[in-house]
Length: 522
Image 1 (tube, rainbow, N blue to C red):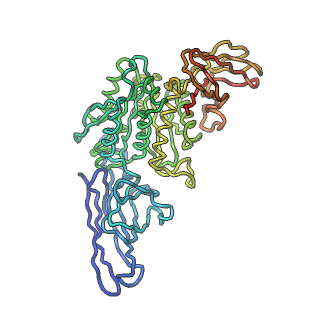
Image 2: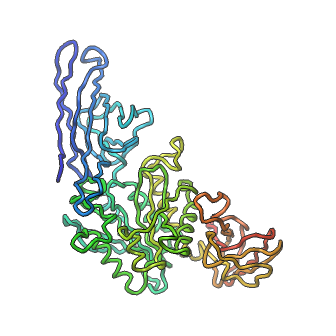
Image 3: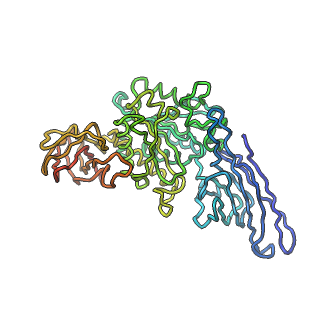
């Protein structure tokens, strides 16, 4: 592997009774390991004497930066990621200063599998943490690692599901397989299914994106009724690890050659990384008959909140921008970790995957980047911090939002747009810049205006009915808008044709889609 992967540090332990030699070794010669150099180290005792004193080691580690980008030479290399093992630290306090990274509270592990975040009190100052270690070997990382081996193990586990087909869609620059998972119900014809593309781990330090995707895939292959309906109504193409060489080699944002694949989508063939070419070729093959409906690019960010990167209407179109805002709002509905005001807005660029999609498919494919944080959620340092567990839950929430957007929840979560409503009495049809389903929504002319929603072949069950509360397309919309609001509980249906009347509670009431959620049988 390129870069310095093994360092031995010898400390002179001095005490009243004389000199004692001890060795602490620091290594990173393993999957996703990364360390640059040690620039400072010393040890002292807290108390006099060898037998009753506590060694305190001070270590300053400089992270290894990615190679210089040979394609986008103006892009500075990153040194964010680190992942190394310290041996010989049992029964001692270590002051560990990380230089070259933007880490806040890193993670540690005694077994290289189960990682915990350093406590708030463990943070000394700036990028320094201190901790008493009980065991001889300790792994330290920027975030809980999701290694290349972790990805392969999850793929093997997922492939035990009858709903997953694994394909090798190409090999990386160093010869590692790039896998794609196809998740669907093979017994339902392909022709009428919605199509969803998801790829992750372009930037290799962004382990939270992998934990997020892990939760999404786990929910999709689950035995729940809603997962079954999603698989019946859609086909998911998922590339869990776009940059396997970068992940294995412990790079931060690049391939081993220094190329940032995220901004490599509009380069000539001679400057296009093999992995980007693989994705392009695969997407073109899969869209030969019709485009993807949704394409998600999963990332992680230093900013302490979740983000969708929403491309402006000026760089796309009004209707595309509206759909971006709708998926963003739907995601807020299903998780407390993403809130209004946390969206990111940018001009669409062809160097990104989203721009490549737009140039080929225009509005037909809703292509967006979804970012998860490393530190804490909702910009609240005193709130909930990011863990592998809540990232997995966020992945399941993201899946539900996509389901609502595309109406693939079948009889478990049915979306009926107001454009399909019948017997409209006392309503105006409106199409403006608000966030809503379809091409229009309705506004009541008077209190008591009614409309009838009808859908055929609805299974027997008890349903809760929600309405979509139409809101503004701004990043500061009210918490009471752009959301599902419960309007009727426990509506019992005996099966077959389903008809339900909605009555406006006041003049000016805005009505868009209804959501019918079947209650789980107890």
